[in-house]
Amino acid sequence: MKIAILSRNRHLYSTRRLIEAARLRGHSVRVIDVLRCYINIRPGQPEIWYRGRKLGHFDAVIPRIGASVTFYGTAVLRQFEMMGVYSLNESVAITRARDKLRALQLLSRKGIGMPRTGFAHSPDDTQSLIGLVGGAPMVIKLVEGTQGQGVVLAETNQAAESVIDAFRGLDAYFLVQNFVAEAGGRDLRCFVVGDKVVASIQRTARPGEFRANLHRGGRAEAIKITPQEREMALRAARIIGLNVAGVDLLRTSQGPMVLEVNASPGLEGVETACDIDVAGRIVDFIERSARPGHTRTKGRG
Image (cartoon, rainbow, N blue to C red; front, side, top):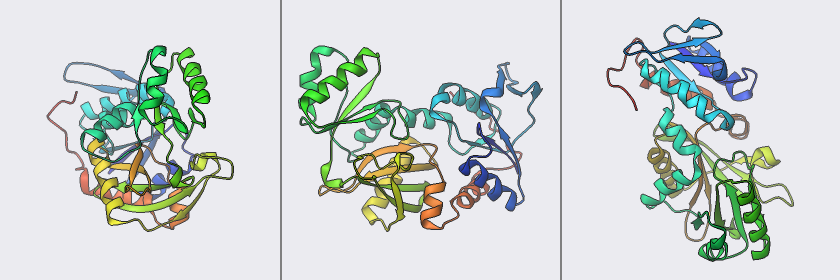
């Protein structure tokens, strides 16, 4: 198959591993910087141009679209979909996952457990909003933040008010959530590929930090998850519509809770901790799911 990887940096660990895994299985791979693409929207003849030349046909595309370029990246990915190219994660699912508010609304509608969450706009509602999630300590996070950026722990109501006022002053959209102290600075990253959790790790925050993200200095170790955690991770990915996802869970006395569903989960932490060829599992899934030369006849919105 001819596979395109949408990535702005071919030297990133995840991109490099996907290239290796695909070529090892005999596929042709091209890395495409999504910001160097431009699209020709023609009735019945959609095209993508790249660095001055029209792109040829691909059988599948693997989107590794950074959060900062979600709008443009998913527009280009939609064009691939309009051209009948199989997308590992479709554009609409990526936009759902990137909007934390929308993702949580979709998950809550299906009864997925999660921390108590609030969202508001008017400054007059600050006290009521804080009360909605049980007061401090509480977590305040930007709706479109990533890798732990834009996530603040407010240990008092006064601190929460200050952070909320600051975010509102920036005209930023944000969520407030009750802080699950019993998690102890740990969370689970379940790596979903298709209908399986192919690997799972426990991430532990470094001392003095509540965010367990590896980009924030957290450490990762392989862990065995429970059947309930496995099923919740799979359900969360299905609800958002992702074939490949990193589903972050908290272990609590009320059962597992979903923190986030990531549409472009990094491979380095999970492959290193679990010694599992996750990139290979992803390419295997594409081989089962994409049909070379197949063109969709139904348009996508």
